[in-house]
Amino acid sequence: MTLTRTQVRDLLDRYQISPKRSLGQNFVVEPNTVRRIAELAEIESGDQVLEIGPGIGSLTMALLDRGAELTVLEIDQKLVEVLKEVTAGKKLTILHEDAMLFDFRAYFDEGSWKLVANLPYNISVPLICNILDTAPHIQEMLVMVQSEVADRLVSAPGTKAYGFPSVKLSFYAESSIVSRVPPSVFLPRPRVDSAIVKIRRRETMNNEVDKEMLFSLVKAGFTHRRKTLRRSLGTMATNEEFMRSGINPKARAEQLGVDEWIMLAKEVQR
Image (cartoon, rainbow, N blue to C red):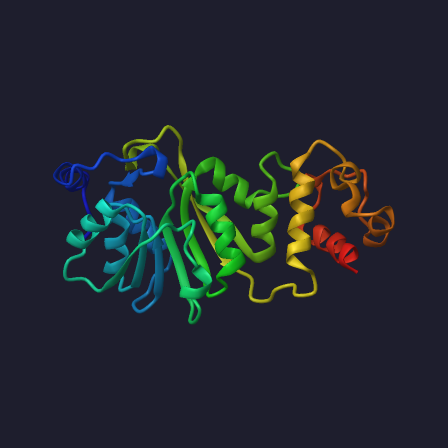
């Protein structure tokens, strides 16, 4: 049973909780929205699911209703107490942890996991990138993020939103925006629209490239995205390495797809 707007307000009042902007706390209060998220995540009974930032527990209940074997990470101790009340009698693991400091590699070290979450806007990009880097057993993600962030994650080369997160996501996974979400489903109501992004890890990875080298090049390239690669990468890549990779040193970072970045990184690491 999912929570209504009235129930969420009642819980916030009883626990004297004021949503913290510093933690990106915007709680989903529309039952149809959380049911839709669980549906889009294709949750089946017995699936191992991670939720980050469950807040009051609206999405948590929708995931439990579909039979998820659920683990949730919540940084706010008051909300941990709310979650215990809301999910009383349900089987789940509640961890009082900061997702930005959590060791995903150590905890999610076996099996196949799905991440399903309404992510706090202020941590969504670095958190997704960290999980992609460190937690291969989290194989699928369905995350609700700020619309502008969603565009950055899934954008293609040559577009305005294309940047470092786009390249990293493309290296690890296939991704797409599967739905847009209006501010009206949240409490408090944010000033921006949201979007739901589906991310699925690639079945095979390119293991020939040094990932640290690859992402160092990409980050340097986008640090000064108006400059040519020759100028933005400086001594990180020589003219000979550009020539062998077939990458034009006069190109700009946003013009290169992930395969081209990989070709350049392979030459640099030789």
